[in-house]
Image (cartoon, rainbow, N blue to C red):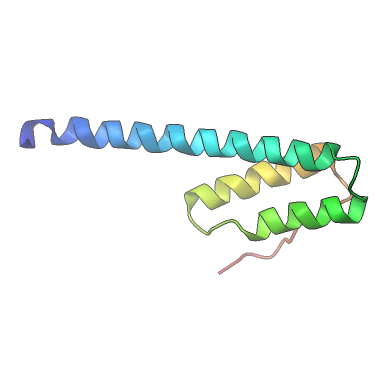
Length: 88
């Protein structure tokens, strides 16, 4: 078991990175669906996006999610003002 410890740690890290990438792709899809939803008013779309932003955690994955949301808003929904203060 000790001889494979490093390999197992590497595999676990690769799995974690793959899982995070998949989650961020799903987030981008959710953002696209909100932006393209013709049944929502602009304010409702903004509310959904802000709720997603607020629901992020303060770990590495949450930071990555906020970056995805920020980039999406800048590209596709520039009228939305995201929080700029640092969360604690």
